[in-house]
Structures are given as structure tokens and as C-alpha cells.
Length: 113
Length: 120
Image (cartoon, rainbow over all chains, first blue to last red; front, side, top):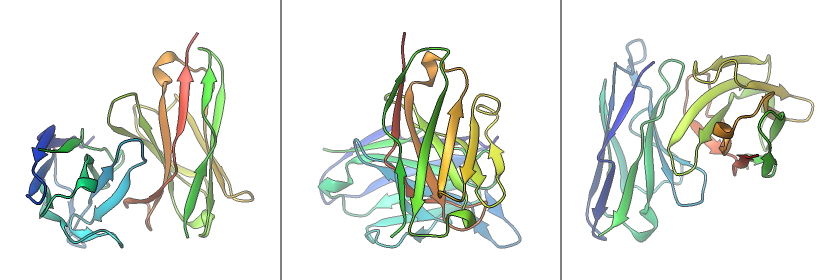
């Protein structure tokens, strides 16, 4: 199974400042035949189901604000929130879908400083 | 609008059986993989497995294979997750979610979750 490791476990950022979340996979999630990274990011606000933010590592889901950016390739990925807003307080998860089981990272809690 | 509506909360005793549901609407139910995700109290997301309603093909996490059964009924656009012998450790919120397109894809729509409590 591919293990997804997120860091940090939590971070506190001032409103309007940048938040950076890292995700590392235990093996490559880049499929050579189509040059796509099989990696997604989700946001889970308190008491809510998760919401898809980013897929194929860097493609923003429809309706997701452009302050959310996904980057990285192969085994190392980053989710950046360029200017933190109050509504961004949540736990963020990465997930690979390269090979079954499509495991999630442990999550990163983002709070306001 | 794509919607997944899950069945209500359940309180069960150890050893009992349970079947929870996830009804899809707003899209062709038979043509999109549906997955199940567990979230134990205060913990992260765990991928349990996925099912293709069109032919009931499944992919399971080894952690859950043999512990639960996934099924789908295309006549009612409903997916199911079933236990035969619940344990206290099955206490969690269970989410169903739809994959965007193929069998290797992200979850783009989620149900509201079904809370399952197993306690004697």
C-alpha cells in the first residue's frame, strides 16, 4: 500500500497570510503514460463532509477559490493557501488514487493565529 | 445537481448486523464508482473501498475486506455498506462519495455521512 505522510500535523496562520501543507507519498503516484499525478486534496470543515479542492495534483475543482493551489510531482506535493480567510479553518487531507487502496494522509489542521 | 443522501444515524449492539445506504441523484448512477470512507471519532479519513454500480465490480482496502460488504442497486440508485457482526471499533462516521470519472479518480461529491454507534 502507498503511505501518505502529511506535515505539519497542525499550523496556525494569521488572516491574510500564506499557509503551506506538505504531502509525501511512499512511492511515485505519477503515471508515466499520461504524465498525471494521481493526487487529490480535500478540505473538511468542522462537522462537515470533506470537499474536493484539487485533483491531478494541481487542477482546481470548479468553484474552488484561486487562493488554493496544488503543486508537486512524483512523491512530493504541496497545498498552498495564498491568503488565509476565516472560512479556511479546517482539516486538509491529501489522497492518492494511483493504485488500490487509495489511501489518505493523516490530515493537517489549519487554524487562525 | 449531483447529490448523495445517506441514511440516518444508527445505534447498535456488538454482534448485531447493519446496512446503511447512499442514494445518488442528478447523474447516471450506474456509470460512476461510489466509495466508502470511515472516520473514527476525532480521527482522519480511511478509504474502505469502491464499487461500480453498473456491474458491482469492487476494490477493497485490505483493512476492510472481509469485514464489510459493499453493494449497489441501480434500480433505486442506491449503494449500501453492510456489516454482519458489528464491533465497538466500528463506531464511526461513514461517508459515501462519488468518483469524478473513472476507477482511478478523486471523490468529487460526498454524502452527509452516517454516524454509527456500537455500544452494549
